[in-house]
Length: 426
Image 1 (tube, helix red, strand yellow):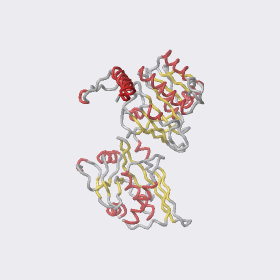
Image 2 (cartoon, rainbow, N blue to C red):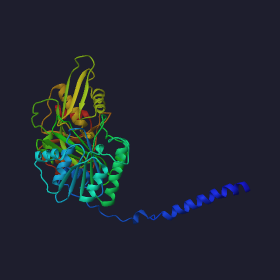
Image 3 (tube, rainbow, N blue to C red):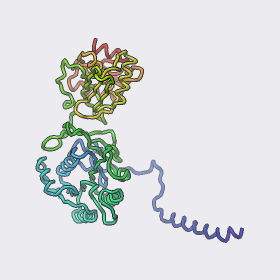
Image 4 (tube, rainbow, N blue to C red):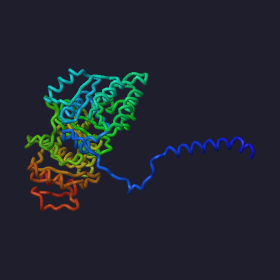
């Protein structure tokens, strides 16, 4: 007992004093969640409807927004257009990759000018913070975060420690001064944002700018958003004078030139909160080299293999010895399962060489037993098809709460693949 009291008492006293100091530093008091006040976060309008939609209504003061994408996809063009069009806000555009002359040439090419956009070519974190203090901008743009370096870290720019230190410095300034910051980031060979994973955890919003450089369309997706939904997407068209916002993607994604052509079906899809109609193209041919090929562009290849198995097992179509190629027109990637019905219809149309009527579109998920499963927000899909002049839409049969009388388009409900095929191919 004496031994415990002799050496243990001092330890106990030390722990008690440490815990006492800890509790003295706590200033915030716990509150019931129902009593926590909610204030509407003010948003900064970027004068870009597609970007504002993805951000959840505009930029929040003090937020860090990370924009990633492949080289040459248009990240710098997107951010520069936003910086030049944001209006009366004072913008500081910091580039570690281009000179002010190069930025001026791009601004002239996209025919945008602004009296409130300041540009500087700098890679030193300390000097950038000095510019922020002297200029006091309303928006800070950094292109790119991998080019910055801090004197407090002895490593090369782009290293894990440099990216973490520079992002942390920017984060402190943004939160203390309510300064919104847009960071442009590179991606690695795997398509992920380069740098430590902690970079994505530190920022408030992570946007992915994607698309095929051989196609004109670009998709802006939200991977993380603390101030809005991650389901929204923005669609842009790359032109010679910059990026154009696509407010009605259905009219651009439909070719309207597929009459009497087999292997084409139109699907009513939804990405985020927006419905649009897309063209699904399929080509089925006899395998020339024994082993059949399966290829999909803009669609999950594993799901394509599953749909082909359903066609063979449940519908009786022998496709195991044939090549199947699938393409989503426009170079976009769609994850909505409601395009399953259009995919299998396009495949069957190409297989039997009978075209699908161009005035018909469809929406439905295909199950493993060959049933057509209901999809979400069917009314918006029907409304979009009716607005674009389609005469008929095929939807799942067991859709609840649907009033068919109020639509100008013919709505046909099916429960199995066989019923859909009888309608399409008689």
